[in-house]
Length: 187
Image 1: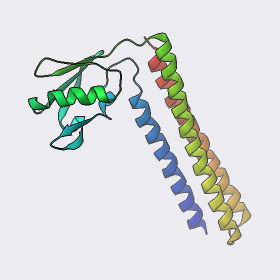
Image 2 (image 1 turned 120 degrees about the horizontal axis):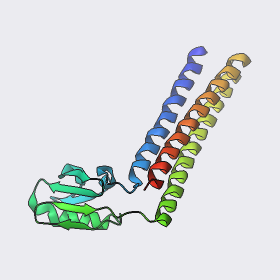
Image 3 (image 1 turned 60 degrees about the vertical axis):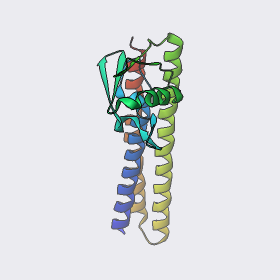
Image 4 (image 1 turned 180 degrees about the vertical axis):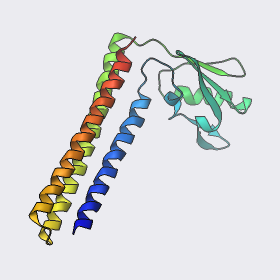
């Protein structure tokens, strides 16, 4: 029976780690006023009849803190890349010189910063909900094992371990959210 408890705990930890990884990805997409190639991660470009991620048809770099540079591998893709960036509704205006596309990242207004902080907190809350859902699933699994003959002490120890994981991951989520909030509010 101890093996089943260990399995539930390992599975729980993996699922909670996945929630953290997802939160980190979501926070990357929320811009903090500084240029980051990750801002264009969701942009898909029409390339030989299929939608292809921008970073697979070009090199995306940040020459300075307020500029993104997109260097397509084929010059003929420049209009398609510009169109894809505009269609992605990121609030960015690409500017091309025939060889490279430059995107100036506008300075965030105070109102926009507060709106982004709300979005960050919402993503953090979504991650916490996910972690709590995993905790509930694990506790249900432990209760089921108890009905199948697991001792009450082992079940209570398992629940305590699950709660400890939940608390640890909740703290990680809070620190990620706080760091991103600080990043956004720093001018």
